[in-house]
Image 1: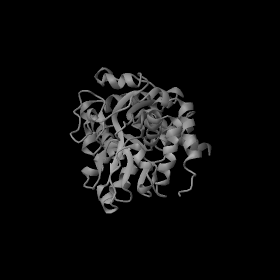
Image 2: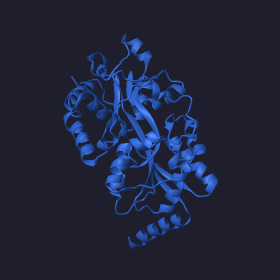
Image 3: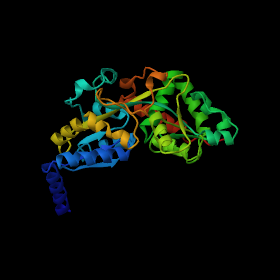
Image 4: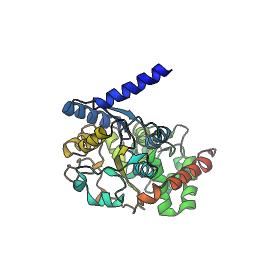
Length: 335
């Protein structure tokens, strides 16, 4: 056992000495892979990653707090970066490109973490499935609770997905907490057994393949499925919707902090941010010098709420909201 521990420590130290970087991938795996490949090509150093959803990323960081195994958290919704910073699992690092990042993104997160991209929450709508059922497309959040959509709605699980947490807190900000939870219970009745997905993009995946008619997801994930040739489109709720500001953060006490900073500077460069669109990740990049992908949803044409990132990223608030959903909504039998 002692020998194994010594070998593990030696291996970590060797990787650090050689400049290798390890990161949690909270974005799409293809995006993380193309970034890792570009990093190795330019620097000659490895960038290894583990794909985890937002909630899973936070759980992993908490579990490894005494001995972190990662240098960077790349992607994932802002609540995880906010919470991680507050719990000192993540450390704010001011990157070289700081002044090139959109000022409104920096102001919205109150400089608590580094913005990497942004996007709006919405629906992935499969009109083919709806037409077959002779149903109209939902226009707003409240429509998702209509009994005529029974078995036809997919959404991610907030215990693993930052997308789902953003959905719940968006509903709270629009309708108030109790009304929002009443609506979530109605939506739950329309979600099939396999309709709660681990990642946020999973709901778009189910809609694209016709397993459901509507998936609650970030709209760029619906666009990605459309670009891949599936009969699904992105739609925004009429009464307004929330946004995410996905981040990139330095892990506190990671094995290679200098390598982590170097990697963060690398991924914020316009030429590297452009790589996202090459693997059908259509978020709006944070660097103002990076071209916005033509397929990315136009946020200027979407009714956006004034999402309070600091409030909903607070640890106690986040834990309470997710716990309430888990206790009051998820166990309910479908009628």
